[in-house]
Length: 346
Image 1: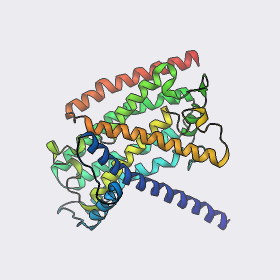
Image 2: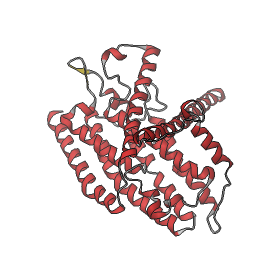
Image 3: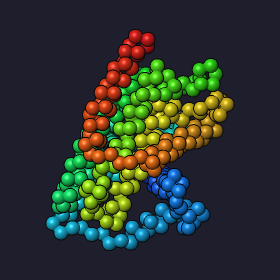
Image 4: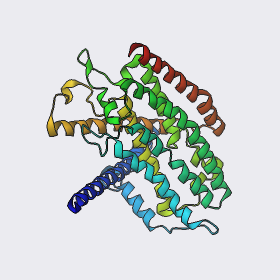
């Protein structure tokens, strides 16, 4: 019995370490990629000195932040001030527990996986409010309140958009949602939800992506850190690695949003054409499925970088009006139409 418990615990620790290592590696090179892509879009030079093509620039930045003094403001709540960055980062880590990286490459295939994802990603707003309140700074608190209003507003259309592929798949399991998109129409058109369902999942994917941008504080919805209005918002009193944790979560969340979009709308790890790995079996199939999942997720991350490098930031009133007056009604209509299609045509 003791050996079985040790084996289970060892497996859990190994999986947790692998997921954490993947997140840190992905974040390092998403930041590098963002700098290079934005440099290309804006006709300027990105990182190109530290390592080949500047690939070690982010590592150098992390080492610099580790050496910076960790300052806690006078009058701040020291425990909550320290705890807030951890609360913000943990959801971006835990969501990967149910993420199907490939055929069979999932830590835990929960039958309520998408509910788990929605619940876990909602925790970040607590950390943001705690950070603003614990800083003992009125600008930090104001930024935290704005962030809470933004996240609550855009959480609703995001959940509505997520429900559309759930209806078509008939399951809350992320792995089952991917399996529901298996196969090809006419032998070459993928049966991904974005290409089916009378175009309703495609509309839902646009709603999801828009709400996701606001959820991860991404341009054009990066009001949480609008220094032109709020001197950097809820994290203004943070320095060193505590400050870095907030941005670690932001970049990790950008990959998370992309991975969930791929899983729900773009077939997950299913290859785009049958001759690109659909006929493989065993270990080769597992590796190819992982490859296609990462390629698709990377493509969506690249779209997010493109948006970040080209779109201007909206005002806070425009942000809230768009969320409540456009995104939520569009999400409700799409969900109602999808439910009608599923109920009538099956």
